[in-house]
Image 1 (cartoon, one colour):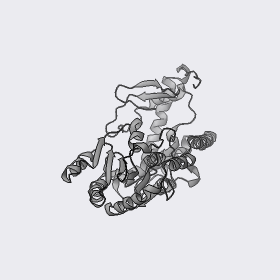
Image 2: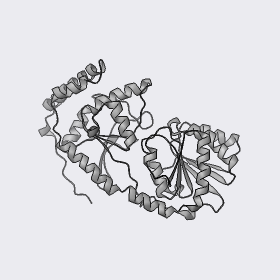
Image 3: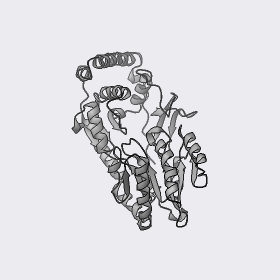
Image 4: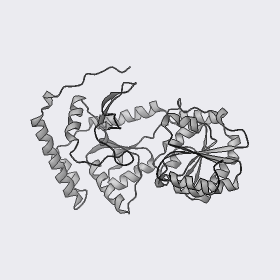
Length: 370
């Protein structure tokens, strides 16, 4: 289930048999919708009953955390309160890295045994090396593909690119992505006269990411916070040597001979690129691809997620009172507020059960997968 995308609303079937409900709610910022407490409850209840859902993989029952948040600023404090409220009624949590697990446990105070670490994976059959697309020596292409926002380190790029181009005359940059920082990057290119050395691609669809990656020798990630970074895996699968900021769970993604880590400062990243340039002639794109294929296999990831599903499915769902007891511990004021929300939600559910009995909801037939 997800929100509507433009005119795409309702029920759609993917070519692999996956059934997707596009709920008629419009996003307002970077794909996010306005939060509601009860707005979609009636619709979600119908879908869950109709599809005979027993495990929900979202922000209930099984929860996957892809983010790293702080603890000191106001927004983080409020976000952590909401996370504690959400996970108080969750059977199990999946984090994509050990750093993410530690961050989630500290923020939500959830018992560590209820948190599993299962990394992302990459479709290595889709991200194949293509060294024939690279420019002839001695030119080396550095590829950047990300959302051009502050959190992804776009401000670092603005300082880093002129520094690298001044030091290394045979280095060119290919920057793919869009966002509020793209204007600043365009201004930097024009200011330093780097139009012939920095190629700004704008938005790159996921289907075209591989075609951009295979043009490069080095992949650069400048994120200021990152729980995992799937873009690094895609680049390594295409045979690129990775230079990245040492933040979050990034050090867990690849071994040291495939990943050069530096502090999130332009001078450090410039030194990292210089080291990568020296290593490029000794790296084999196809060896990198084979190693990523061995380390990150979707079949293995799927088996591990299924174990979590089975564990969550076997967990007995608590009645209202034990759940309220957990909500009450979420804070002196927030705990009482969360209890009120849960009680109203429970009463609303009871009303819907009376007004729209589940026996009157048609069950969706099972369709065999292709």
